[in-house]
Length: 391
Image (cartoon, rainbow, N blue to C red; front, side):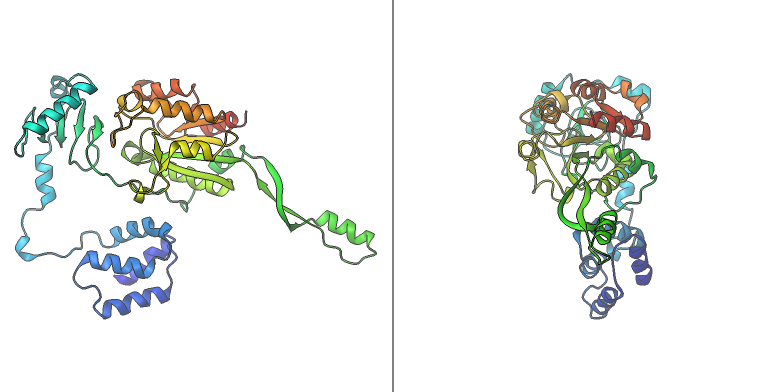
């Protein structure tokens, strides 16, 4: 089992060596971690991972290799908790969904939630009023309401929540992912402006031959600075929620951009850029960067590229406090206006099929706010976006 785990890490391009593997085996023999999968996880991660950029790949390989293996208390055996959770979920027919009415707007929703929090005394399930599970109340989990606040539920089910009352964890995009097609890199190469800068380190063969001939055959090496793409790109990536289904496309674009642009700065956001961005999803609640600081750090000659499906509640765009995860003092539209005003060469890449854009209200709103500079994350769309950025 352990040798298969080691080989799986190698296949996933986690740079593990035989020395590190033997260190892990000696630690296991010494009883550092016994009979507990969590202890073994931390031990193996400490022994095998040298760079935190590989933590996400390590976690995925670990989960695949040791899926279903855990420390079990025999007295606790019984019906799995996950089965009970699924029994509590409420799935409604389309006819039943039409009978469930929204409370009638953002202010009414928040006002009612405050009242429920003050009045409710215990757990509730299956109803239409209280904060609970498997019902049609606007507040709770594993039920249905056309416009509500999700509390205590793992992952999306109906994509109807206007706010999420949970701390969600997102993964960083992998900058070492294999590109599915070379054409993504080819499209990005339209955004190039070459110049020779820095120290002279590259051999200039024609000038060396010419200078050697003029020097009576004595070798006279001529060097020039290395040729670099001087285009500077500020990349903002939507992460989590509905973007999970577009993770592969986003990772491919991210990896291609890392290889094509020497001057590339990357930040993450969720649904809509607000007053803060972050570089590492594992620390997105602790280590953030004020968006105003980003606007002042990277001047207007940088090219702005935003990647996201723009699928969100309209409140997130137009309403202070409308963000699903925190209370934003200014609506998302204000920050989009500032970003596209600061960076005249800007484009939004949307991984959702272009044919679906007109049926999503938030996508229409974002397109209007950014002056129709939204392009599909396809080869044709990338080509059009690069032409826009080169204008």
